Image 1 (cartoon, rainbow, N blue to C red):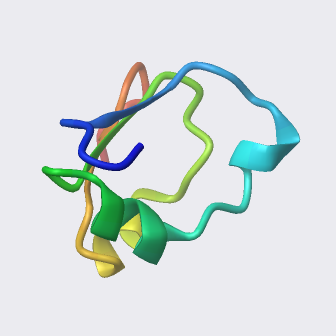
Image 2: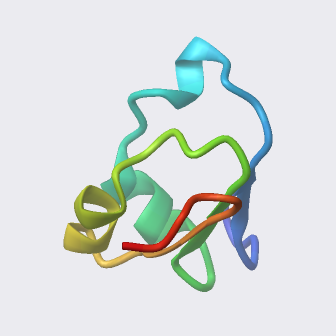
Length: 60
């Protein structure tokens, strides 16, 4: 993940369910997650300073 432009989540594996958002933010070139499985609460991710794109989730 170090130096990657973004993180794309395309699985529901258990090891992705409780990530260190601080580590993710610090490792990525641009702190952005594209989540195709909608694993995370957008408000929680935002509190860690990460842009979160929840693919397929209804807005609001």
